[in-house]
Image (cartoon, rainbow, N blue to C red):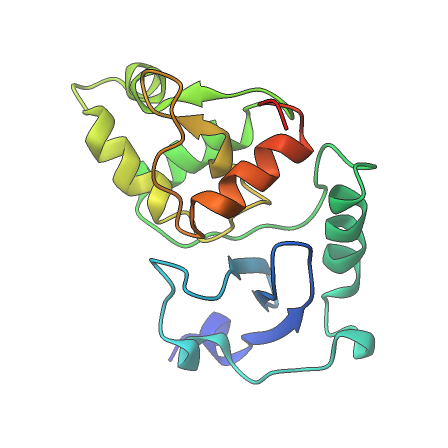
Amino acid sequence: MSSATASARHVIVGSPIGPLTLVRDDHGLTGLYFPGHWTRPDPASFGPRVDAGDDHGFDEAIVQLTEYFLGERREFNLPLDPRGSERARRVWRLLAEIPYGQTTTYGALARMVGGGISARAIGGFVGHNPLSIFIACHRVLGSTGKLTGYAGGLDRKRYLLELEKAIPG
């Protein structure tokens, strides 16, 4: 077991889109998951559950999420430590660059990554983004602008895009 895994811990916080499980280790946040999350890892990897009010490194993330859901925050300033292959992390870095209230497509991301990667492959990397909301995968749409796949479900994707006024409410 790595030291990062050994130091993992999690908290569950309420939000307008249901309870969110935040996971972190000593290096930063490693996950944000919804109930029914398509690509949710084994909860045993989350470490022990801690209380939100006791900090354990979660207080600032909770404050920033609250501000985001109130429409008062457009960017997150938190230590993020998503785990994945180099190519996955490259896609997640591109997701993090999509501005608040704007969208892009899987095809556009594929063109940015280059190397002949398909929009479908990009969709796989986007779907495995372990830090939903913090790394805004909800801002990626299908080629026609249609809301497609979201690990937290399309209702949550729609809510987040309406919150950001990226689509009409």
